Image (tube, rainbow, N blue to C red; front, side, top):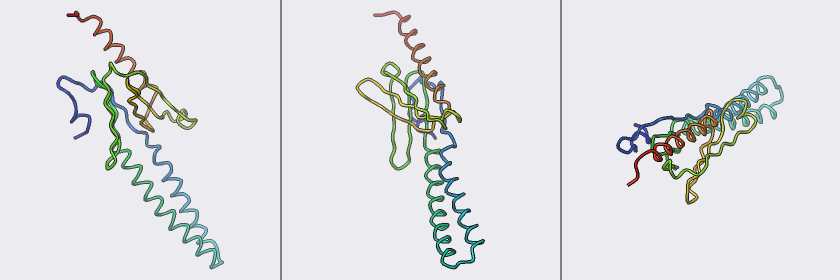
Length: 168
């Protein structure tokens, strides 16, 4: 069961959820290509000293690739981001867990950061800031502009409903 579904309040519904972009595997792919490069150099080189250094480098890139694949997999499998009819809820991490739960009425701003690659492939960092300085940043979120728009739309709807309800 997911963290978000396990922590929903009564009558709370998930209205939108965002996912992590598979681009987080890019570093592992580059490391893998580097490993293949040194294996090819090992095969094509006749000098024993250069062959030994190529083997060492290939082995180092092999272990780096494994580490990066595990790291990216953990991020991909453990990051959740959702907007409900009451809160913005997000969680990332497995051993070191980072959670964010901000009531919609307490959200002050939603910031999006995208570098050039992020703009081209439509991913980026979404930072939600609440009153009192509560802040949570979540990296490699797919369609971060859409996430920001959805949060703002839901908050606007929430404010309209609050203003229309009779005051006591």
